[in-house]
Length: 229
Length: 229
DNA sequence: ATGTCTGTTTAACCAAATTTAACAAGGCTT
DNA sequence: AAGCCTTGTTAAATTTGGTTAAACAGACAT
Image (tube, rainbow over all chains, first blue to last red; front, top):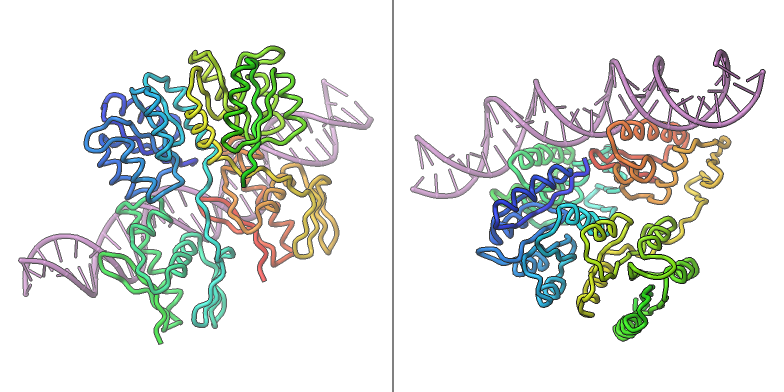
């Protein structure tokens, strides 16, 4: 239930396997990638609570990967894992935005404790501010899960509410499927995508009395909510 | 922002001096204590943003001091500093609630980076929360387990009271199930979760005469108490 | 000890929200 | 137009939460 998702990039298949199994046993969800490129791809697709990056990997080393991650995301904690123990590297690790640095060999217990120490301090993703919206003759109160229409008010379920908020925040802009999925469903998989389609239908049903507010489908891209005259 | 106050306990006067000067140079305010007892006294008197504790000190060792600190304060980050590098000690350091562990010899630069990494994640200094709240025409006195409604007052049981306090402290924000469970029930297990659901129902019953104060369910996440217009 | 009172947990059953499945419809490519 | 992929729609299955009451446990009094 805690559902803490960890990205592990480690090219040594043995160590990777052990790490992944141990952390899964401890209640984390882990995704193991064998090189930096795959790690980058995976990070772009899913939402993680923590990254454990090996430094020396084929395709793309841990520092480079960390830098790429930090361009898009300043918050997700990063722990480096490495055989090197050069002072230079440790310092470099922190400079690219890492949170901790563990040198091999290490005990699983120490790793677990360092993970917990880092997570303990990790901020929950910052929430943006506006929570009330007006559009046409709709009033929408995000914190109350409530949509007011001329015909009366509707109570929204959690998923309807999260989705509608994103639309109101991105009026007249195309909302990318995968972005919405990562924000609300935490990762974009086939089934979550279908689930989202179901919720798009629910929102359209709620909005159908307002003929000038539409959720358009951008085929292969996502959706866009617009107000038409 | 500038003012970050660090407690350093270090019995080696040379190292202590160097640490203190270096960190002062880097813009921190530092208080240096030569042993654990003085560190404890100082911590009780002042408010710090970070503690750097040597492990082997006269009067009171670093672990003992950390434990004493954690009894009163769960938030201030603690970094251990030590000549030992026994696996045992590292693990122990995290178990008593430490945030990082640096073995001597280390470079000042590494220490600085680790300090910054820990502070980056540290929660803004915990404000003392009020114990009396007003919301709509409710008055709630936490220390007295008492909720005043227009219709009269209610005595709350311990669990009702703890739960209601968390809601008042997090008005209009989603309160995560697992966070509430860990705070009140100490761990989130299936049965505790169900117990919490029972208490949510009790609170809703207490609040039902106030139709504009609601505890909303955020499915799969937690609950949110809101005042609606 | 025995009983009673009070707060809490466990259990059982029900209701709501979400996900999965299945099939239909639309759009793009050739 | 045919085939393939994406999205729409509906309903069943699954998961999560709501509600009530019974079981349990500790405090206190007899």
